[in-house]
Image 1: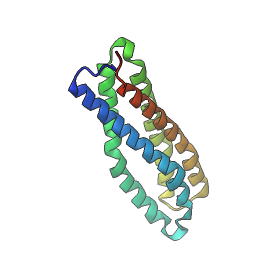
Image 2 (image 1 turned 45 degrees about the vertical axis):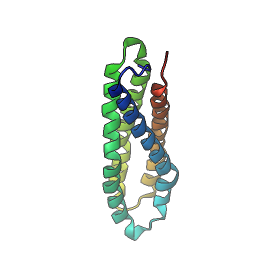
Image 3 (image 1 turned 30 degrees about the vertical axis):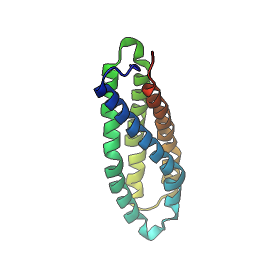
Image 4 (image 1 turned 135 degrees about the horizontal axis):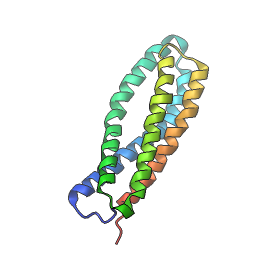
Length: 150
C-alpha cells in the first residue's frame, strides 16, 4: 500500500493521517489538561459545565472520528494481502477507542452530568489512558502508511 499509486489513495491517506494526528493531539490535551482540570470547576456549576462540555466535544470530535473510521476502512480495502498488517492494527486500535468511548467514557460523562463525583472523575481520567495510548499508536501507523516504499 505504501507506493502511493494514485491521487485518490494519496488523498485518503492524507485525510486519514490528518484526522488521526488531530485526534491524537486532542486526546493528549484532554488527558493531561482538560480532564484533570474538571475537578476545579466547582460543584454548583459543574453539571452545566459537563453538559456543555459533552455537547461541544461531540461536535468537535465527531467529524474527525468518522473521517478516521471511513478512511481506515477504505485503506484496508485498498491493501494487498502483504500490506494489510498496519491497516488492520490501526482498525483494531480504532475499535478499542470506540469501545472505550462507548463503554467507559460516555457512561462516566453521564454520571458527571448529574454533578461532580470524585470517584467517577478519577475513573474517567484513568480509563481515558486507553484512548490516549490507542490514538498515539494509530498516529504511528498512519505516519507509516504515508512513507512510500520502493
